[in-house]
Length: 321
Image (cartoon, rainbow, N blue to C red; front, side, top):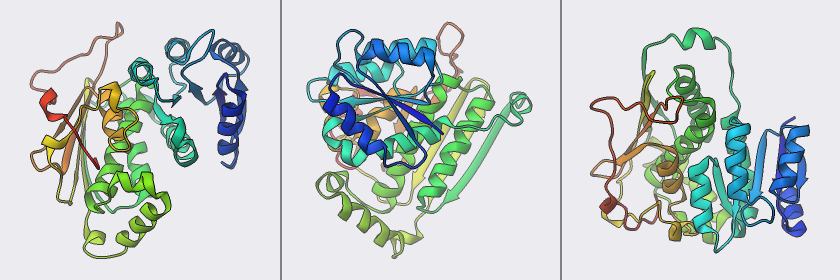
């Protein structure tokens, strides 16, 4: 049974988050009142996932992420962010957190995000020694707009990246989150032509429309194409949808803390934080994500001819991706 440790100095917020996650079948919930209390509890029992507030006494959320990344590198951390904590949140994501949920969106996003990160954290170690001896691997898929297929795809790509040594265990979950966001964008915003702002205003209507379009032409005929290339030094993922794309000139800067609370663009922030390179094609219906292996001292092993760094001018305001 997976265990989630909820860390928040507010008893009201702590219990509210616990109540939301308590609805997930087979999940064990534990609580800590701040970062210091969380670390003491983790010494006694290591959880499968940590969900933490940022603004806390003793050890705050950012410091907690940094300690967990060093002491428990394969334990993912999800941030609960409040207005005014945007700078801390971006720093915590860069320091190793796996995802975040704004506190004002806990009701709609917390359980979904926890399920997503737990799935990404789970892996099968069978045949690991043999797979680590594979020098190069390339795969190509064409899948329907099916969430189960997307989840299976994320798990498969994570497994290949880790088994070949393209990333270490601590980076595996973050790669999975970035891929989930990219594939979800391709499905909902690309092929199904749904806008993120609609999800924020009417959660139920957003998913009802998605189900309707999944079963109706022309949306039902569209596919998500995925090409993945792996070597011992890097993993490269190209994800393309059959939609009409978007105007790259309308992108906002996903790494700017002021955009953390925007209703649209959460996936962009996570992709740019967790991947080394992110680049869209001219049409806007294809994204290429690159993750390079880091050496023991944390420095990237950069391969000649690899890298598709997006320029700052490409990120100045998006609604939907």
